[in-house]
Image (cartoon, rainbow, N blue to C red; front, side, top):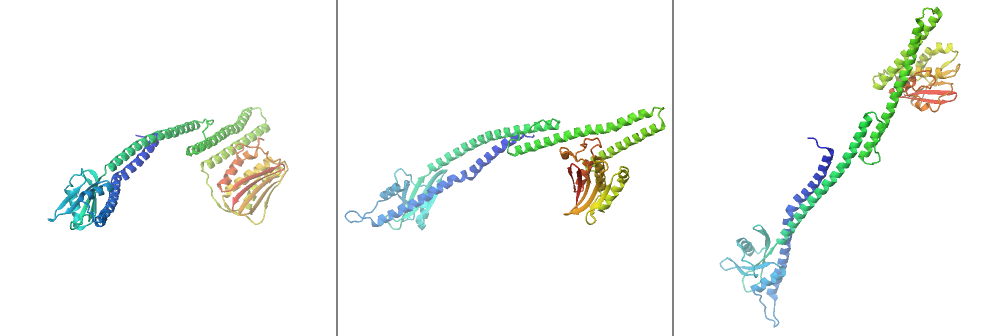
Length: 468
């Protein structure tokens, strides 16, 4: 059987209360009665010894008004001790035949039983005080004190002082009842407090669960209560942050699908149109060749878009494999520049590669670095002024290798800069699908590098930084 969190929290509160009550009941109550009884016995022993000394001194030194000796009778001795100790007193002595005789007891005191007589007998035998407590289930403190109270008798006597400890038993019984009552009250309070806390926690958890289900269903307008500062409040803030990120991802996904559909639809529509035109048998050879060139252009555009989408998908899924080796970055830049030179020369433009300082050797994946440079150069050629030169600079400083591609175009609009590396963002001029820079940024991150952009009217520079 699986218990709910509410039941478990309530049981936890009750369990803590039960453990506390049990600890008191097991640690304190069993020894409370004996401890109190021992304390009373020690007090009675102290009082009895003091009174016995006073009686002995009085018996030796007492005098009447005329100066004669005063001899206390056994009854007077017993009554004096009883008045000062508050207990029942018996005076015992050793008879000539060796038996223990009871000389006197206080009024209403029964003759001592055999166990008490043995206690007094041992004191008469060796002169050592003795005490005991308990008598057939009842708490009674008994003290046997040797005393020389009757000078006329040989040897010494024993004062046997008894005191009932019924008040100790009553006190312990009262304490037990109060502990039991307090324990029951603590359990009830723990049950009520645990239920309230558990109800509050479970209600908040249900709200979080409901909100999570709403987010999982794609309803990102759901809100979480983030006002609390406890652990559940931290959880709510984490869920709300997740909701916001999922909403942004969902928006990006929808824009990605819409833009990808548009980018695929445009060349496909062109292909369909040219195919229909090519079916016209009256087309002359020059027009037909022009249409075929356009078909080839749109097919290359589709292949390039498919390759870009495939690269992006591999990087997002972690399926892109890097093959690092030590290469000269200046040579890589020259290789990429050579690919673009025919296009650049036909357009009457210039593409320069410049090495700043000594050759820059870098441990990286050369194919992916070339891909990044290729994307940046292609982007610079598309968005710079006709006839403007594009420059590739290779340098190393501060333990970082840098490849910077600069153009002298109109620059990037400030509102576009934060989104420049997002897939399908583009620049709004229809010059591309907007995947190149996103791929370049992701490739740089895979090689533990960074891709930055600085742009102002008349100059834009993209810089690839790789840790040396």
